[in-house]
Amino acid sequence: MLHGDLATAVGDLKANHDGELLVPGSGALVRWLLANGLVDQLDLVTYPVVVGQGTRLFPDSGPDMALELISSRSTSGGIIIQTYRPLGRPEYAASTVEPDQVF
Image (tube, rainbow, N blue to C red; front, side, top):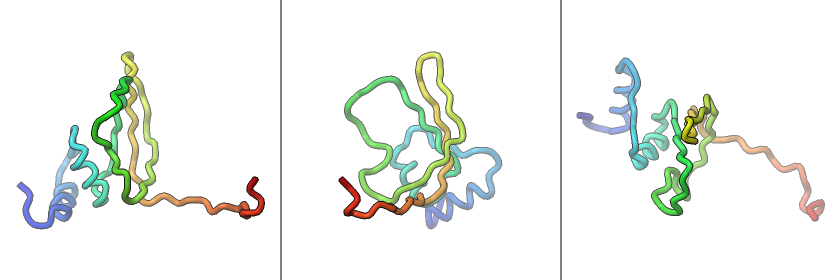
C-alpha cells in the first residue's frame, strides 16, 4: 500500500522496484501518471472497431505532450500495438508567413 504523497510514493516505487510496473486498462490512472511525469512507456492498442462513444484516454483540455514512437506492430486480426515514450512538452515551429501573405 502506498502512503503519503502519491506522486512521491509512485516515484519511489519506480526507483526501488526491479522489473516493470504495469497499468492495464485504467484510463484515469494513466492520465494522472502522465500528468505527474511518472510514465516511461505508453503502449496503445487499437482494435479495428468503431464504437462512436466511450471514455477518452486523453482529456479535451490539459497540457500537450510529445510522444516518441518506439515501435509499432500489428496482429493477424488487425490489432495495432504502438509503443511510445513521453518526451514532455512539445516544441512547435513558429510561423514564417506574414498575415498579409495568407490567401
